Length: 242
Image (cartoon, rainbow, N blue to C red):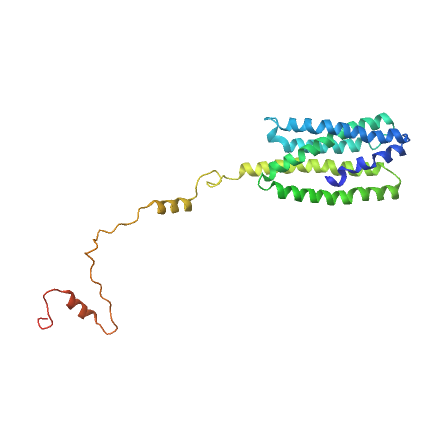
């Protein structure tokens, strides 16, 4: 996604100059993108917060990616200033939607406890993609002397990312519906936990013996036979009577 998302905005001014637009008007195109982006981000965030759209925020993010990619593809042959202004409005709108929804989708995917670490990983991968994408696009422009191919490549990459996001979301939802819910996942305790709870709840056995009723215990010595112990255990019998 990030590999081609920022390429059109970076090459927009030079692309407009190559189309014959004056320098001042070409620079104003970036201002149009910024103004539309400022309006699109909070509006899309409020839209994603609605109760009906909240469960489908991943599909809304996929729609924003596909819209951004199709905007790049359609503007590859824009040569007039009015066409470039229309491209800037559409690009700023879709770009603002992507920027507002990507963290919402990340939160829904990993949950609040894992969100900080997931956010760091996503930003790291985006930084690597931004480090590779625009410089590579600039090298292609210098080699081919053509901006149309760059817009085609960037738009195709972003649009395919949106399609992949939608398909992956649908597959994950099907897998979660088909998977049987475990007792522990629904909040109930497992069999092992129930057994441990029953053992802990059983009362300890109480002794019925009094402190003075302790029986004498005999310890077997190495030379003592079992028959001798039996004879000593019977009261009133001595060795002669036996």
